[in-house]
Image (cartoon, rainbow, N blue to C red):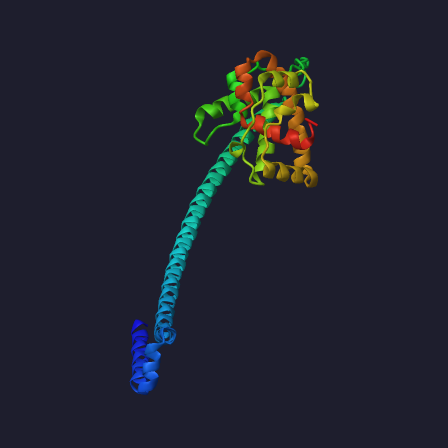
Length: 311
């Protein structure tokens, strides 16, 4: 580009030089004697040269800007591709971790369901009385004692075992958790709450709602005691500490459309209300706070908010 400008400059100067060399002597003398005419002639010679080089400089600047713009676009495209690739990798890693976590929780719930079924079946078998053989002929039939005695109610669980049972075993290898769960199932009220909680947790998991993933706004133990004493509605609304909108929306839709879920949720809430009312008077504030962080308590917060317990 500069070479072209230099060529045009030389051509112009050559043309101007040829013009003045062929100019008649009288006209040349007149031009040199008139300062204004001389300045006009000088401008006529220099201005095209200046325009040529200004145009050249402008074209060079424009080319440089185009090149810089192209480099910037290429750099931005590279950065965008790198960002997209990193986001894709991060999403895939997160999806893999979530899938693994969900699979682990599903396996744990399956194991827990099997344990519950195994623990409940023997109790059902006890309710079936054995058939007494016929007595020998000719001998008086002794009137046996009627099997009307009922199994005495087990002693209430210690608060720490009650809390741990309602949080359920952490994994299928949590031997201590299963031991406590077996003790809880031997207690009539606690066993009912464990079963109702397991049912509602399984139904919630079908929609991808897991209690461990929910953030809980903790309420004071005083409010939990007030709830145990029968206070419902807005006075204890702070107990509905689950604020996750997606979980609330999914649960509300399930409550509205699925009669099985709705019946299970209402049964769970009634059982929770009754069993917690028995537990609260013998628990310290710290134990109530620990209970409020169990999976069962979180399921109560979620279902109670949807069911309108705190309205």
